[in-house]
Length: 100
Image (tube, rainbow, N blue to C red; front, top):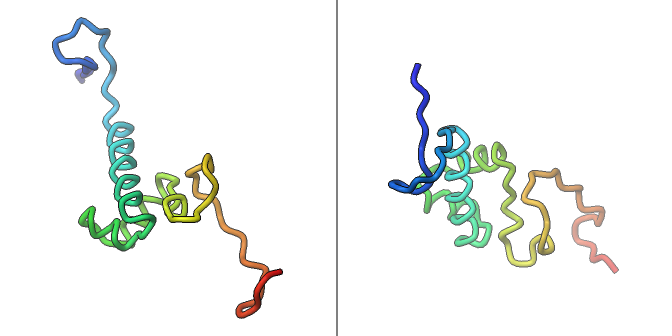
């Protein structure tokens, strides 16, 4: 079985880096999904439509990649919040009541 390598700059005399297709594909997929979520301001349905996939497929990919849509929404988590998928705590305020 052959081992493939790829230079960072084609034609350059840079040291060769092993090709890890799975990690490169995941990074590219994360980049595309992040861009679509940023463009749609966290609207997963619009982001999925712009990517040409179903919203359920986008949700599965986001879960696998540890992405959260609320990071891209106006008034979302504070700057510097991790993009990791963390469960949200339920709202302690009963529906219809305003918090003081």
